[in-house]
Image (cartoon, rainbow, N blue to C red; front, side, top):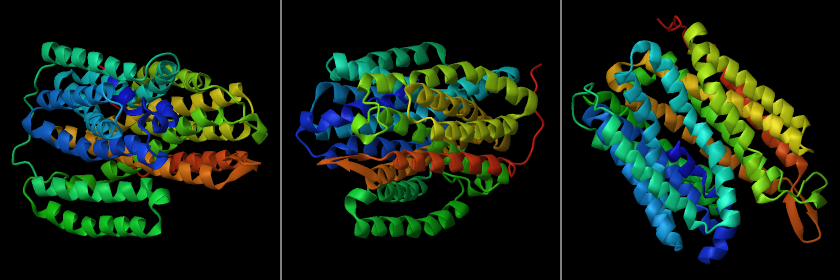
Length: 444
């Protein structure tokens, strides 16, 4: 939960960060971009390292990274230091797939599905609670406070892991695939920079980065298929059960992030736009709280559905629910109550989906590859959020309304975002049908 919160706590700070650091908006945006890049690169790497060298050991490394990054951000207002700190915080998102893998190794079978449902849902719950909490800190206290809180809770987490969490005896043999890690990191950096910086850097650099990403893929794939201990087992990843689950994860990540991005901004739009509510930053954050509560309450329910009907059924229900939420959002963007209802429906679907995805992955991969496979699934969600961020930013800055020298996104811009996100959820629901069925895991 803490690591998930740390990923989003700077969002309310962004409008003021330019003035704090004396840098441009484009420079300040790196505090989000670098977190995304670090999380995407290190999640599969640390997942694989956990399978090979011990999940508890690597979990402690990831938590230490979060504490170090929080400390950097707590001690400085220099943008360069903040970017370094945010990179360390981003790498810590590997805590989630590592935690899921530890639960699979240590718990009796009847408790695994409920436990991973709660663990996986923290990705969404943390974001839903992190933004409102950060808005309160930014509004009423010194913004460094939220990073000091992360430092303290992170140290507490490390102590608790040392005292409570056992080291798993399940290990993967072989050597760590350094070349495979470099290849995957190169691909992800090129791809995510092309997606996230396209509007800021222009056509030339974006095309160059995209071509670089495309060029790396066949070489990296050729190497991974021939090495004895690949970072990513492409033969396993190509199984329909894994492939289509990961594609669903990408689309679910897209649909989830669109909900968070649009809700916080929509309620703050000025009243002169004709649809804006002119709410404060604190109110915008609080609009996400009901969704966070819904995610907490629905995670155990998702586990029961997965136990009785199978995680594929849960994922189908979740995708349809998210698509329905965007239908609600499309027609209720003029009132805070309607916005909160639509956002909460999408969040409810996200909770069920995030609980079902790791269960599907664990059913499809060997126990020795649990952390790596869940790391890849988490990576796909991250890529989905990156693509979503770029598309939402492009739509909201292109489809605008003006009043004198004032410019803001038009209502049509938000409706376009809702349509795209709803279609992403609907496509995910269709892809669920391509995931091979499996007998439900019934509690004994």
